[in-house]
Amino acid sequence: MSASNELPGAVRTSWHGFLETFEPWRGKLYLFCRHLTRSPWDAEDLAQDTLARAFVTIGQMGEPPPNPRAWLFRVASNLWIDRTRRAWREEPLDAEAGEPGRTSDPRRAREAAGTLLGGLSPRERAAVVLKDVFDCSLEETAEALSTTVGAVKTALHRGRGKLSEPALESASAPPPAVLDAFCAAFNAGDIERLTALLLDSVSVEVVGATTQYGPEAARRTVLDGMLFGVTRLLRAESECGVDDRFFSDALETPPRVEAREHRGGWVLLHFYAHQGGEAVRALTRIDVDGERIAGLHNHFYDPELIAEVCAELGVPSRSNGYRWWLPAR
Image (cartoon, rainbow, N blue to C red; front, side):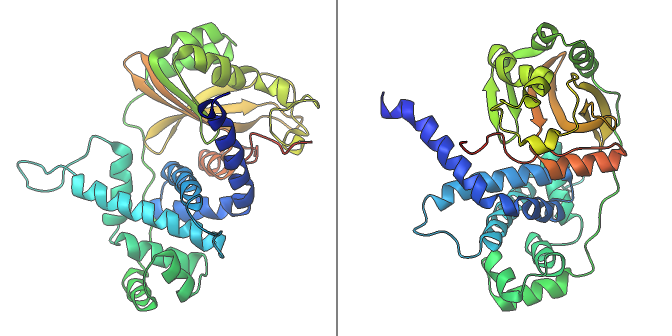
């Protein structure tokens, strides 16, 4: 077998080892990103990007970071500050008013507006979150922001008292017809109809776990798992990767999905049956291109995101943990 054929397995093993090591800080990382971005969706995106960047970076380091939490916060801060500044620089100008206009990318606009329109610079906001929310020392805050204690004190002086949550947005239009079609096909257990909704160029992912390209690959893995995975999860001999304790009272009933409005967009809630009633165990966002699906993003191993979105929507939720694999038995 060639080295190129062995590479995916080797990278996967290293990736799993990295995630196991940093799992104790996953919740704190999400919370940190949540305070920076002020959006659960953007926080999860930033947390996933942080883990990916940290994995690459740690492979280039001579030794592991002495303070893993501060180091993860540093990676997240650098990513977010760079992204926010870049989004602001690239914001198109309104030709008539000569002022920043609306960008065609709503997620990028939210990230930029979350800080710049909230009155804080990216560094000020990060400093306040680290010091006042996570109770980091001035030295730890300076380390996380790659700056000096004096600069942190200045940022805190300017930034305190300016943190605020934006008002929740409401969707301005009804859900696209393809969402209704997806829900109908999913709840009927019709994988053929689901597959037919996908564009040939579709990208389908279980966030943080797997990404598939094209309808057939998506059908064999992600769609099949979303529809029928609960049966495998409840089998003792399952090697699907979810710890048995997360499904101790779950029933072997196919999940159902429904579309809900959330923060100016639409999200699909996956309800699973339990002895005590239904609870959401997964969320899905869909990128629409006309009457077809161009992208599908399933959040199954993101417990903080699932809990927060469901709390805002007033529906019960359950955690699946972070892992889609189990250590060798």
